[in-house]
Length: 428
Image (cartoon, rainbow, N blue to C red; front, side, top):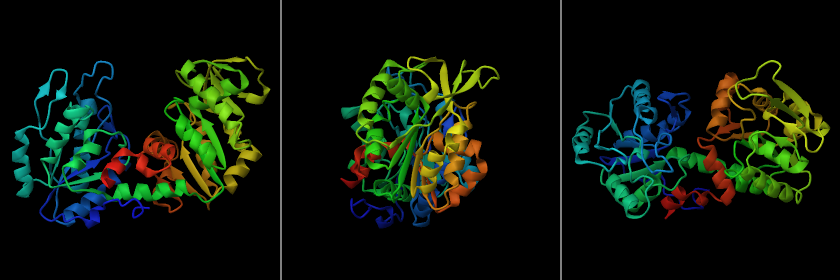
């Protein structure tokens, strides 16, 4: 697949003595804490390679969403700092990494790269330090800016280095650090990006039967990929709020927390699904809760959707009951699958875990299937709820865990990896 799209590869670059600007997706910090370093560790192969070939590394990533979408103001604080990532890398690799400091505008974050970074680059060239890690790219005004402001920031980034490497599969949004820097520097795909693209081929051309499981909190972020999966997969299973909206649209239930927008998407999806009879598998047992505060005795109950009357009003539906995964038809579908794609947390975390545990355990009972897991919450919940299975999955050739679930869905929606703008920018 890499050859088919003419992707420029890092192994074809001359790195000796070069400053290499590497865009990674180390967006694993929440409120100053790293909950799972998987996405950091996944890029170490690229970093080792650059170092072994004589390159000097400048890293950059985004963390969180420090920009207020309504006002455009950028909030710089420790909750979205890259410092925990730097601390992790220094402790794991026993190296010294420096972070430059820039002038902070009251409302617009960092206005650009300043000349104060030059002394760190000299230290990097003289082997006094082992790497530089730029502050959160979204702290810079130009990162998400359009037009000349974005171009200016990309030009400044390019001015720091000789070569640009994109190893940030999960960062699929078209921002300055992902789609513009390559205009100004020789640009290549890192090993992680290559690996993710190669594994996407197992979704584009799956061994059949192909079963897909997708859950989420909003229909609109997943609707286009759901249409594609319903067309391409042998079976599709929904969970989370998107399943609740589907149930309301199809069976006339009223479930608390379903927005009008989700209902509109769900109604269209129900009509679309009727073109593919038998493909969409409904999980019959759901868990209703009177509260979002937790799974409290006496305040939650299990329903069979086929025993509820049209117009039934329910409180919050926060999980799929494990009984759904004990249904003979569901067991048969998962047991006979050759390829399984999962981008799903079935319940409202952290209290409603029954559906996710039952799903992952059932999938693991099929030893022959290729199991492809999306990143983000899917990855974190697998590790939290089934740590033993997570450890096995990391090293098993039958499992592959992507570093970016949203990027996978975007690639599925477009039907080609070139639908991801950072990949398309590299190929250009």
